[in-house]
Length: 320
Ligand SMILES: NC(=O)c1ccc[n+]([C@@H]2O[C@H](COP(=O)([O-])OP(=O)(O)OC[C@H]3O[C@@H](n4cnc5c(N)ncnc54)[C@H](O)[C@@H]3O)[C@@H](O)[C@H]2O)c1
Image 1: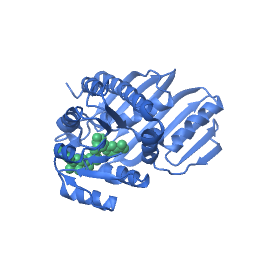
Image 2: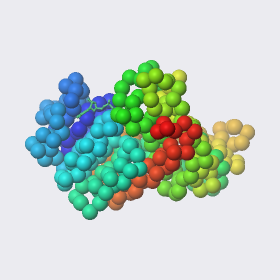
Image 3: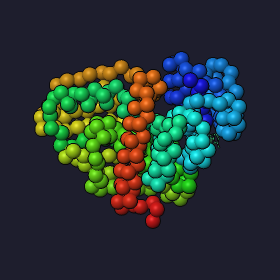
Image 4: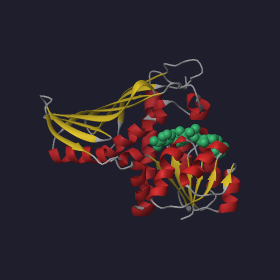
């Protein structure tokens, strides 16, 4: 495997490089227009790697077979279009695409050629969410409602490419809602999802021209799902609550708690905080092979369909 990284920003420094290092995978080249970020990536790798500011030169010189690509969302189009002529495995950060139209183009790149795109969606590899799924299944409880809350506090949400539709392609619904929809896809084994109601809000205004909060009601397999996503909350939250007839299941990244309807804790499991990124890389690079790429591509298309449907049904349509 000859891996190179295009885009060495925050997620690559915080998660991808540590996961790659921990699995003993060698990185053969780095590309970023920021020399500071290249330097930080070199430090994180702890060995010297050829560095490029142009991904085309990197491809010509290094001829990698696997690319990790993590860029501002508007740049994926150009990079993937160029790369699609090469024989490559692309591990690309979410979202799969800016919209369904682009998703279809990216999906076509992957068909019938030696070019495969895997979209990073690591949250389904969170051990606590796996345990939540199996606890619900083993309990035999019929779940009627599920709430997924995913919020982060941003001191200045106007700061970078995320605040501008032209560079981000959408706000928190596309950026963070993508993860939420992937969790739903995982918990419900890819069953069809409908949108009952969607409300995307821009509470920041001015230079911020995308949504920074999203309240979306979905339905899947007879379960009402409420998703709340925000990048302007005062606290970070990432949790899932599932309400059954007799039991309430709650999971965050560290634990799963089960209560009876009197709210008494009847079971509690702390979960090993194993990095979902490491488990994700392990799975698609070493364990699940071609089938893993196919499954991921099909999930990515489903996610894009639901995200776009919510956006179109939304009371605040940012395309208006
Ligand atoms: N999976 C997750 O949990 C998760 C979390 C955060 C971000 N992401 C995704 O990762 C991607 C990057 O997000 P980020 O938060 O790391 O952003 P970032 O702004 O920190 O990083 C982007 C990097 O791209 C570089 N760059 C910009 N233009 C370039 C070019 N032409 N050529 C080479 N490099 C260029 C920038 O210098 C920067 O280092 C996005 O798709 C985002 O949605 C995923």
